[in-house]
Image (cartoon, rainbow, N blue to C red; front, side, top):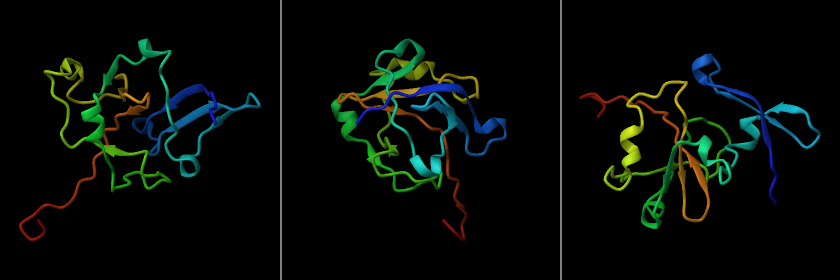
Length: 140
């Protein structure tokens, strides 16, 4: 079943002091409601008719798509199923994707988001979160 939702307020990024971010969508009743990520996980996105608003969109090949691995780490600690978070262990070659050279080295809260469009029509959004782990002589 497909639902079309309108983003009805600017998302609040974690940089603004909201540790989990905030997203508001207009629901069927017309009311603007905050999405509870603890309940819905990561909502699916689709920019098929709005690609001009997604300047950093990578079209992945079949082999690049097949190299995506479901993430074994749920860094957000929210309800996220195995088809919602992925790793791209081989990365992307800037010879095949010159757009890589346009992505800022350090993401700023005002930078546009980075998306991947898969051959089956699925859209993914890159998330720059890190999980730092201790790496010392005593605990490598």
